[in-house]
Image (tube, rainbow, N blue to C red):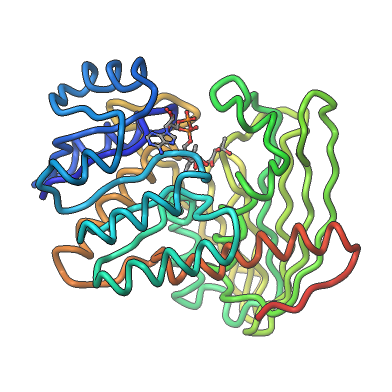
Length: 338
Ligand code: NAD
Ligand code: 89V
């Protein structure tokens, strides 16, 4: 299977590392409009065919899929170009800048009859996946409460400077992952209310968000995110989870410890730490491992004819939560979801 990478920036390096570990797949061409990043990535991964322009690459190369790792403004034109070229596509989160763009991207790939997966990888992190699978397996009975919490003071701005200057920050960048985990664990939401704050005066967007969700299945959950939290231990990039259900409770605690209690008594404690891949760097190894897992999932879906769990169609629901959270925070009201 031959793929091309578009966007050779900060995070794409992880995607290239992960492709090298996946059997039967090769990235045969790469593209970036920044010549330095393009040349560095080509040299690092031994890719001979390089392009400054994605259109030129799609016209010249014989490919099966593209992996789009640019920031969000370029996602729609690149996904549409992939569809027009008859290629399958992976697109980084946040999928699109608006719901209209996201729907157009899904329709374009449907028309082309090609697979579209959003690189929404947090639900594929080993510890988060262990929690989700336990819940889906009935570990706590019928869930009625959830908390999905990501609180950190880690400096994310040095690697990703746009996070400090974009008008939207934590909900669009990080909250999107945590909202997606809440969906994966408790199902789709019907209503949402959000509050936001900016604590760090050196950035433009919000760095704290607290979101209350009503899920269609009857549970209520809180998604809380912060990049302004000064505490030890620093838990970046861990999502901490608590779910209470009719038959017990589940906690994903700091340090990748999964605790399941049945009927308030019997307790199961599991170490669900992610493996440290040879190319990974703590504390990012949790995210880096999930990159390999989600890319393997995409390849498995293409080979087996399945639909990725985080397909473009599925991600419309996650993106709708992001949009509703900003709308709710701006209006100070609770928002009903379509
Ligand atoms: P970046 O700015 O470091 O890299 C993006 C690269 O894309 C740049 O080199 C830029 O020149 C290139 N580019 C932009 N538009 C292009 C176009 N039309 N044609 C060719 N090249 C183009 O950004 P980043 O930090 O690597 O983030 C990229 C994406 O990955 C973002 O959407 C971000 O939210 C996402 N991200 C995801 C995770 C995750 O865990 N899933 C983590 C970090 C970043
Ligand atoms: O995963 C992400 O999207 C990253 C970070 C973990 C820094 O929020 O941007």
